[in-house]
Length: 412
Image 1 (cartoon, rainbow, N blue to C red):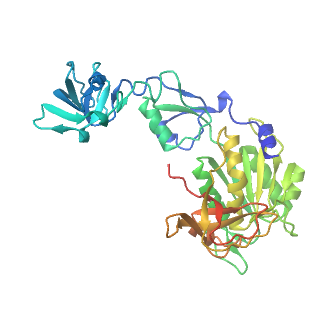
Image 2: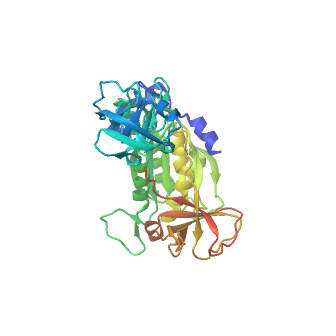
């Protein structure tokens, strides 16, 4: 259902939606066109080691030890201009160009030298062609270096720079509107009356959206009444590709999100078998007059509880935003760790427990929960560095059992 509505809402891959940015502005953007390498990488055969370059024909003898005369030195960026003949070698540094006469490098630590003129090494310490990087073995000129649809990472920017590419074509940033609904909510700086709370959800969502480098439209706090919600939804839909609200999606007397959605568009689904985050709505708002271009606006109605907001964003919203923005790889990578303690779980729903990943005494990856897992305990998210994901049909987890985990932060 999510994929179908995303396709209907029109992915942002038209020429008009592509912009050119410098490398230092491209992190976490979606690459719009394949990058073809303009050069061979490496551009010439070069040494993979500090050592001595020579012609491997000398290895064809039955002598247990090879002795060669050193005729010069080659540095990275300063090639050796002479020739290397039979019985000779060249002292060479990592990255230095290989002379045309040489095809093999013996690492320096495998050699013996008495006077810096002769070197000796055992024949079985190197094979023909070893420790040489061949021209184009990393990338060949004209071949794809980075495919379109890539969520650009620091390593991608470094790769583009190594090819001499200063700018990249990327899909424009999605415009994502966010709002919180609830009469009990107060903005930061306001006094708290009896029964009121500060709105934390917009700040959590802002951080999550900034991680994806998207354009954020903050629609603030909206009162719990149908007219205010309808007006806020219509105004957001004029400017945004996606609207994310928090609160008002349950079945209470003051929960109007589903009703407004049915008036303004289509409800794809409502309520899901997961914890936390069961009351969640997803659908599409019809095009609003005055919006240009006339795209439909995807809508995610997230729960009001702070942890449930972040869990449902992780499970549903993040991948949808990436897909809508043209990314090819949208699903987070899961790994496994050993549960240090028993975990209670009822089959019939997927659960996202907040946990801290570390290591067991024997060095294996191990997780322990952050304590109480209530959907309103935001501290459980702040202290955690991963989710323990307990699948739909799983029951109780015993201490020492392997469980699926998803890390919050990527390293590269």
